[in-house]
Image (cartoon, rainbow, N blue to C red; front, top):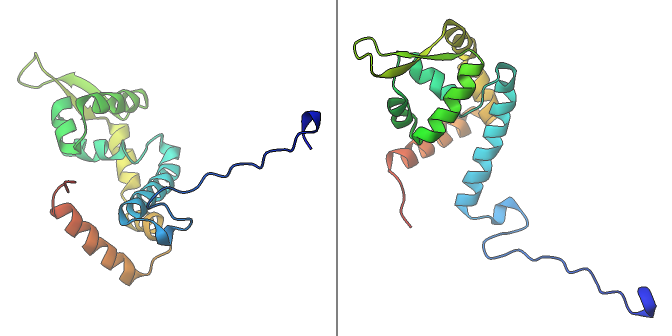
Length: 162
């Protein structure tokens, strides 16, 4: 009995909404893909943390390995907004991986360039076997091959519409 001898109300347990099952096997494909992507991002971020990088900032270094780019060019190459690019560049500048400098022929423009520290770090991270272990630790080589084919097919198909 609760206060003043009233019966205690039973705890109300939330119920799952449509398309949300108790186990991943019952989830819609989109939710499975999203959950798997987050799992890979967490593993990748944990690995990259020792270099003060994330799954989002590492591609910036990879793009800049080809040479300096404007912030707009980086945003387009990375398929993110210029605002997102600016935030990433701020962190990468603080860690010494990139620097902003004047354009070689147009002094009014600035470009972002990879520093020697950034280049060395990127080289140290260029280990495809480590990346594959992080991404596909629970998959066989055959399953990884099948997954790659499916993901490439999805990416080549363009952006789905509702």
